[in-house]
Amino acid sequence: MSIDLKLWKKTLALVPAFWCVFALPAFSQAVPRYKFDSEWPKLPLPNKWWMMGVTGLAVDKDDNVWVLDRPNDIDGTQNYAMLNPPTAECCVAAPSMIHIDKAGNVIGSFNPPEGHGMAVDSKGFVYIGNAVDGKNTVRKYDPKTGNVLAEIPRAPDKEPGGGGGEGAQEVPALGPGGVGATAAARTAARGGNQLDPAARAAATAAFRAKYPPTTPMIVGQIEEVRLDEPAREIYCADSYLGGRVMVFDLDTFAFKRGWGAYGHALSEISADKKDRDYAPGGPQPKEFRNHLTLNISSDGLVYAADRGANRIDVTTKQGKFVKEFVLAPETGNRGSAGGVAFSADPKQAFLFISDISNNTIWILSREDGKVLGRIGSAGDFGGQFHGLHMIAADSKGNIYTGEVQAGERVQKFVPVK
Image (cartoon, rainbow, N blue to C red):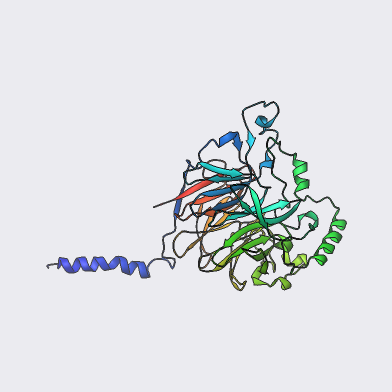
């Protein structure tokens, strides 16, 4: 029997196409894989700096990375070079804002008050969730001078105990030659609870009566800051009542709109604690629970990660609820759903979620929230995490992470074929 070779080659050529359409899983795009880049950032950091806990991370239009850290976390076992006279060559508290280029070189810094959450616009202005006089707001900075250009309005009072959310309030950044505060001083400055339970409950009730959920300004701690430049809007996640998505005009900082879990209008957000109660693996709470972060996709969806409830709410930019993803629901401790970043492909097919409890990056399908893979594990070696807190991605698909706890560093992960 003879074989028509031309026909045979044509038949073989059709097999891969048929297989791709019908035999592969529903998610047809290859899940990205990553490796740790040990050459980024370049070490040692300049000026004997020791970077402390990372509380903000952003990639600018040039794919350079901005790192917000907490210099006041430096302690008596790390600050020998800051003493007078110095008793060792290590170390000096780094500035609270450090600018690192694609190659890993430090190319700039300035020293605003410590805070939580940050973003950088296309003109290079930096927006930081600062703590000022013990109360959080968002400030716009000129990074060349460190000058404050604008500030989002916030409630003049502070809720007892910090109003929910991780870390409560932050302390001002160290001045030149300063020495780190004691642990007790840091805790007190960041809103540590000094009231007995009954007094605190009464004070909290009074505060919430004075500042209802509809209060059109920042009330709790800022957890995340994101920009929507085409719409000229700035999104903030504050910790008040477990978390609110708050949208302000990017030019005037005037309040525009906000919402809670499942797209609840601010007027619908409950102040009842039971509406935030949650047990790992159990039903999702009615309201956001704590440490709310967010990011905005290129197709106009807002992904709000409620870490304490192991979930990610997806809404439109107007706050209309679309769907919800539950991630590692058995996770207790501080929860699984931390920072949110997107893959660099045109459709942003993948979500990258930083997990501070399991110390891993989850790779999710953006379409349905299915877990497709993960990056890293708990540990102190390069490529591992100890307090994985912040995550960002650049236009080339590189992923950047920032750690608190014992990690206190930034790392880079690059895609591999």
